[in-house]
Image (cartoon, rainbow, N blue to C red):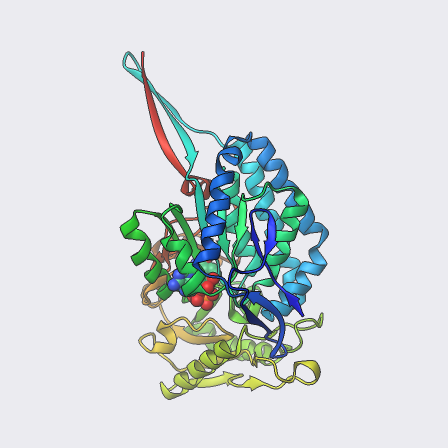
Length: 480
Ligand code: NAD
């Protein structure tokens, strides 16, 4: 059985205690690899390696750093099929999704930030007869990057790439639930010639490894993506140490469909935005609001499509819905379906665990589930479920749906469907969400600031924002 290793100081290393955890394949329920059960001692080794490497990496010309990052991107492209398979096994997501979304995006993250650092500029301001102010940006030193299980390599590299490009060394922790692609990345970094200590990957549990990264006094910046409760805890550790903190947290995103929308496009995309990756994308729309005039027609067409979705082995090409990530997560999602019924909801489609035949007989599969009859105040519509479960509610007016959409503590993303251009702008402006899609979903330009409002997080990733986060701005003024 494969033993995942930490990546510290340029080599693959066993954890200090030599203790390993089980890595379970969600589609089969079977242990298929082991991962290091690392702790504070492993993090201390990673920080020591990073400290050694910092000066040379920061002093390396941006073009040279970019060349190594571009090489890593090329190796990810080369190994796309193997990485997609590994991610599908590790996470339970359909292999077609890993092949077309997760892995290409991981390569794009390295390539994008390699180009960005070469093109980065800083400002100069001239005060006539007084002085010239110019700004320089210095790397923070060592960055701590902690990521979740839902888009394992995609989100892991989304943090690591800008941190490295900006001249930092990194101590990173992938989710213990999906560690495999981060391990494969460490091999690619060695092959690409990334200098030892520049990137260190420590595997293990959040309260041990993650906590040690957040609390380490030599790591001045923490970039975290995960649940709101974990983010809140991390803030209590990092804030008194005055660390830079970027928190990308949970969501409960509204998907608003006006009667004047392009019905077929709204229908097809809503199927994706509800159930892609088993609904385990922080940007999935889980509260669907449909204007009364088309509510019955939309609900009937949507229910048919949801019932027809193919649930099955993530490694099968035709599968649309794979396994949810773990047994514990499956039980959590099923408990929310039970809660929805107790709150008076009507299950229009799905609602149950699915038994898949063959090698996946003991896997964690849930039918795509559609629930109606719940108002915005109930827990089902307020709490993040993070699974293949959506609610559908009718609305009458624009004002009403804006209030409904803004009625949770979250504010990550929102989707609006309308053919009325002015309404599209107006509603998008009124929604409390970090990203609003009008007549599309999950279209991402890596240059744009990305992040949530309210309890969906603080700080912004993407483009220049990430390079700024991983650097300190210094202003120098010269008298003229
Ligand atoms: P999680 O908060 O349980 O874990 C995320 C990471 O934090 C893991 O690596 C975990 O080991 C680590 N961790 C746990 N406890 C820690 C601690 N005390 N100190 C430091 N690190 C700790 O989240 P999850 O279940 O892996 O991911 C799902 C959540 O992530 C959902 O809420 C989802 O909405 C959110 N998410 C948000 C975004 C975004 O961009 N806003 C993107 C993807 C996922």
